[in-house]
Image (cartoon, rainbow, N blue to C red):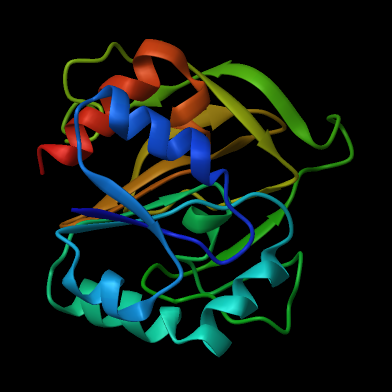
Length: 196
């Protein structure tokens, strides 16, 4: 069972439909106990970084952290990926999970923000998430803040400079784009996550 975490800020139905199309059993949940027993955990996110505060008050943050500590595969999508870092300039007082170092920041004034639409990736060929996909793959983005490039980065995107489009470290995965809106490439990526 894949737990799709509902904290009031995710593109939940589209993510579930993508897993349904792949034949993967998943459930949208607000219940920490369901997260605790899941075989995999997915944290979608749309909107403001401050929305992740709801994870703290609901007990979901602790359930996700415990699942990660038990090496349960985890996938953060959009704000869900940014939450994997220590913090974001979008809401400096709100702490991220901090499993990846660094701060998510604004796009420079030289480009239009939010970054919305299809853009190509530069993919690390060693990535498990992108196994079987060409480095020039296009995916769908919609975001105003971006994660830094670091040693966990497995895909970069160029828009006002390079930023992390995807991160990967052991059983932890994150994507800034929306795989559930990225056609065949997105479905292939979610299928690769299911195979971890």
